[in-house]
Image 1 (cartoon, rainbow, N blue to C red):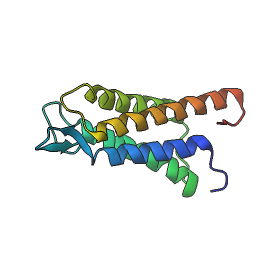
Image 2 (cartoon, one colour):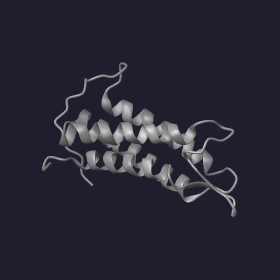
Image 3 (spheres, rainbow, N blue to C red):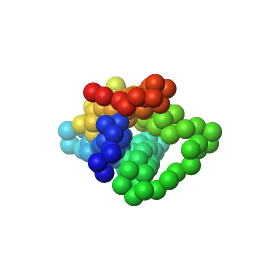
Image 4 (tube, rainbow, N blue to C red):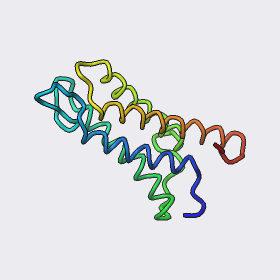
Length: 136
């Protein structure tokens, strides 16, 4: 636990906040609020965002705290690429919902958490290329 990198903290926290955001209001119409778990016309967007949050936070936490070794490549992508793609997918969903009718606080937290995941994935990939640890 002493060897936890800042990017790992960002990924775990970003994934956890992404999951928590799905339980908060995604649409606030005054008399009724809808969270990410309540399906709508657009499908299961909130459920996809929650799955992405659990996958990223759970995978990084399992490696950091549980000593779990995951395969180097999943579907031909390394971990940084996978985190970047999943984070970008969650960002597109949540940021796109920001411009819908009466967005709630859950959407705002969702795209901020997604942006943190994207930033951590980019920092990790630059660290891997340069061979030096990332710093704030």
